Length: 358
Image (cartoon, rainbow, N blue to C red; front, side, top):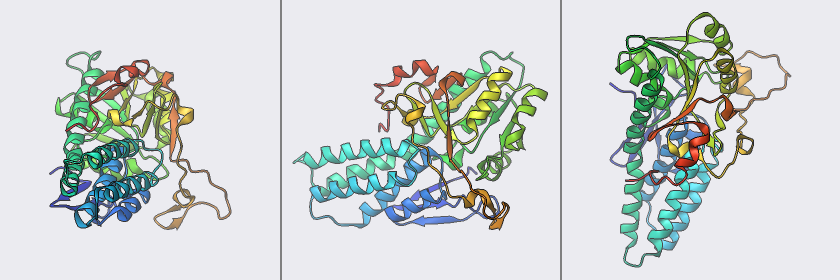
């Protein structure tokens, strides 16, 4: 049975509380936008694709249960609440792009005199509803393109070893995963010998979540500490590093979970290709380079405490950026749902019309 981070059934939304994993499996009801903002901000749901989907679905919950006097009011509520949801995790771009497209749709529907307010609501909800299905299809395409790319220079009978960072699987998306989707595709093709996942301090998404998914799906994997990547690459042949992305700039610079940048440097030194696996919705063409990507900073407590037990000296100052930016020069390719592109080739996608299409 596949892991479900998001349950959306008969207009009811629940998210798997990822703070409690792997010890406890518990779903949290999301009854509206305020709940949506909280589960995103508290990282009960995380991963750029999942953040976008949960945020939009939390709005869908409200729209189903609220009555609005006219289309103008409905449009205004949609715009205000979507912009509020974006503020929950500012680095992840998927929810921002989804917000802009949904606001554009709301504006279009509100100006169309042939459409009633109930029809406007129905069409808007249909658009949000399609996001879950599309995300899974996109992830599977990413997985297949990524596996093909990694295997193209590998002898036919050879198995591959890959490294991944943070969590980019079913728990970070609607299902299947981006970087972990590539791992799944390699495994399905019987070409994966082993995957190494980093613990991903300070929030331990690798240790708590990726390891959980690998065990659940019986994928051969080993957990390593964040500071073991260089030693691993020196001691064992690694075919590729595959990571996700929270935002990709127009030049290919990529913001991803803190620790990605140093892995990219190590991979470059050892001649190991590094791939970023992300849907087109993670590419922000309005940002020319990584220096312009806003980096979220998280609370000190995530560093100073582990399971409510203090592990750092009282009084020490902390710096806790949630993401770092890997320069395009360290990235071999960016795996999307429509193919693999070198960072300098991303302009080919600028005019893509495939984002959130029905």
